[in-house]
Image (tube, rainbow, N blue to C red; front, side, top):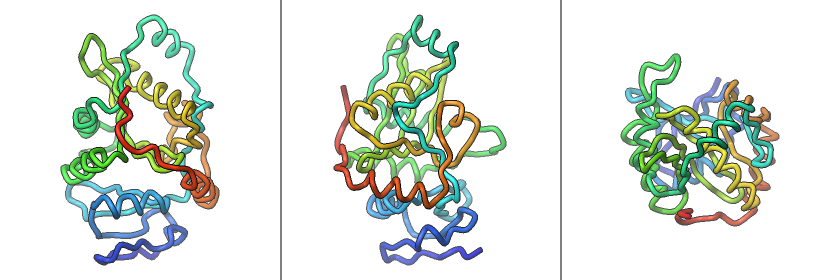
Length: 225
C-alpha cells in the first residue's frame, strides 16, 4: 500500500490511491492545506505521538440532513426536556470537551493541541462551526465540524448529559436541511452514525457527491442565531 510523504508544496496525491484509507504523511495543519484536504475528500487523523496522517477511506458514512433518524425514546426526551441549542457561541469549549471524551478502544485523543489550534483558526476564518446544547446556561453537549459548499464535515461530538449531543446533532440537521446542504459527512462508518440514518458510500460515490456539493457557495462566517 503506497503512502505518500507530503512536501511544503500545497498538493495532495489522488485520494483514489489510498487503497486502505491512509494516503499521506507529513505536511502541516495550515488553513490552506486543511481546506484543500477537505475539498479533495481527505481529512487528518493522528495521535499525539504520531506524525501528521491524512486519510481518504474506501467507505464514508454520509447523512442527508432530511433523513435523520432518532429513536422514539430520544424524541420523547428532547420533546419533554428540550435543550437550548446555539450555534458558534462556544466553539473553543466544544472542541475542548470533545478532546477529553473517553473513546472505546482509544487510549488517548486524536484531537491534539495542534488540531485544536488549527480548527480554532478555521473557526475564526468562518469555515469551522459548532452546535452547542445548554441546560440552565451550562454547556452539556455539542459537536463541531467544517463547512464547504453544501457539505458539512462532522468532526466530533460530546455529551455531559444524556441526549446533549443528540440535541446538537438534530439542530445541525435541521439547519443544514433549511440551508440546502447536500450531506453531512461522518467520515468512518460506525453503528452510531448508521443508527442515526447515515448511509455508507464507497469512495467514488462520495467524491462524486462531494464535487456536486462544492459547486455551491460556502456559507462562510459565524452561524450565530
